[in-house]
Length: 545
Image (cartoon, rainbow, N blue to C red):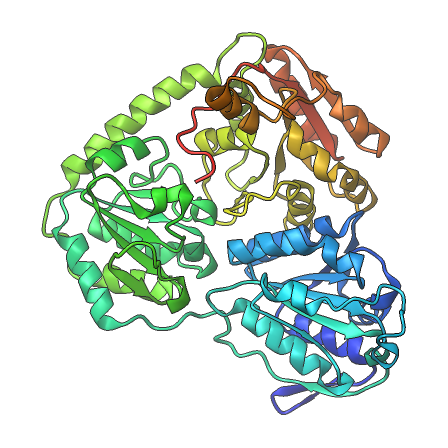
């Protein structure tokens, strides 16, 4: 490779160009499962010093690549072999699409010169991938491989972020030289917002008696947590959090709230939703009688199902404009005190749940023990239904990029891939994977990946022997349930042990804490399999939409 002015000239083959293009964006890890159609990518990674983490299923590789993006705010890279390798990654790619995660999926493809002859795994992936990516195409000219991967990575990082896809026919991976454009230092920055829209938002906030911010993932993607803090403190606006928005303001900040959404809905007169869709998680944009305003990172994210004032643009720019503008015209001390009193009342009620000593074990007790053992920079990963919902209720997040949930697509099986990436990216942080027992069945074979790559992860299973998110609502609606029961008391920790990790099953509340201590001290993938009360029902207010 050589630099020619601002561009990068790459000799070798198309795989060398592809890997060099991604490394130019700061992407230093490939997640993959070995397949002959993509060996040139491995050859390039070996030559250029890119780390390769191979998994046991392409779904895990793709989830890991998405989590890499979430944790680094750089393009994640999944390399999937042709045919079933790519289709195995479809669900995880779709999840990244719904999450707005910058993911680049590079796939193999049967040779173009023999297309239609029945080559191994001959399948046109592009039509499958088009609806779940920002762009999907086939590389047909080896000399353009680097430029096309550069464009795919750049597009993935352009708000609204999301996955992109390219596949490479085997005969296009041959010898070729190519030029890769230089990475623009402004890559990933959103557009400037419309001044009139910002002024209208500022006026709404200034004149509201009881405003609130709901902070979503795009505030994190825009790197806007300092601007959020400045704006919230200047305007004296309480903040609630969604997705990767959790941790953009520390949970112990005076304006951060976790337990008072009911009061928010009942009392707020203005709710500003930042960087997350007005979807089922947020009542489709309705918060009691409050005026709702929406701040999105790009025009295509404007909500069409509700008519609300909207600002489209980079969160940093919008928040900085608010932080630098006039302060509130109304004293918010009473509103903040009202929320804080409710928060502390909720905290006291939670303390009883978190310390519940009854048997069978309540899920809340697990979180009580876990919370006392997690560092401020612990990365918490959720993979499940009700058990993961309890995490959202009880886990406090203190730093950006420390909360990884499934997101609005609700695709289970993300956990092991997310954990693999988290340990790869943050080798000195605690990595905690929270699994429902249903979710544990999707991707547990990738504990082998953790073992082979020496990636210690603490896994905690809330094991109630059922698909609780389905069983309890079915019982409530129909009076019966079907296809909801799993084996009671299943020892998932034995699977982890068989794959080279360690673990134990816990049946009594007093055993949870010591088991977690052993897990954190083990230095290996360790599962704490906690048998929980099957009659415990998460207090859910919505289910499907």
